[in-house]
Image 1: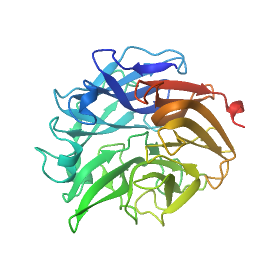
Image 2: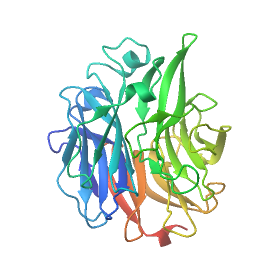
Image 3: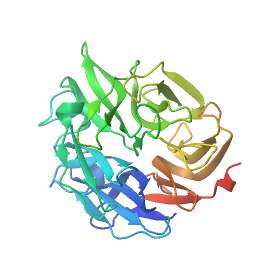
Image 4: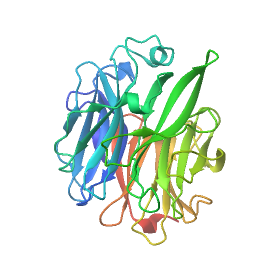
Length: 346
């Protein structure tokens, strides 16, 4: 496996939560959570890092630390490329290093999940000090909050052209019961301010990925908290509201994160979807659709072994670049890159 981030390197026991984008000059930026200890899971000392490739993913530069806040957790990357000004926007979350999932979803933590924003104007080499935007995007009644994790998008046409969109999710206690919803946050001024769109009509969903379809509508593809299939819904107003939740029975899923990408450089506007296509976290697969996800006409099994989170982009030389968690004995041995020629989809 061609690891971009491999466990036990740079002083970190494990790397998780990949995201990838292609900057305006064609450079690839691969993001990850660098976790000091495997035993802490999603909590503890976690730093946000990135590597840059200048040759379409064949080789990668040294690891760059975007945010290291001591023993606290800095994670859940959502990078968005601003095609109008060239900036790489990055949404991410923070929590106190001592707080675990249970603390944060029940209001018993030392702090809460907070939302931050930063950006780079030199394609990932340097980053601004992260700025907190929690109050403008997170309702005070919500407990856990997660940005992505996966790349976000910039709307390319229509009334919301230029809008930056980050797919997010949260938990809220309703009548003493924890419920899970997804939504997006968006910016119409190149990241200066952010607003929250309405939550999904139904609960029971979480980590999500968004794309712009050929008709300008947005599709939100979601991890379901139960069952073994993906959910999706459509927005006709740039993510401000979402329509009915539907199930895509062709997308088997182990209740795990997945990634969606539309190749707007291709006139056919192919839609790619990647996930661990199994009832377990294994069989990392990329599927291709030529009809906005109504059907999946081709697929490619990339790694049949343990695998989990992923993200997708198309390189400057036209290959599908899949950044994914995978290993031999467990899914989290590293974050690997697979470059796929479009002719491989059958």
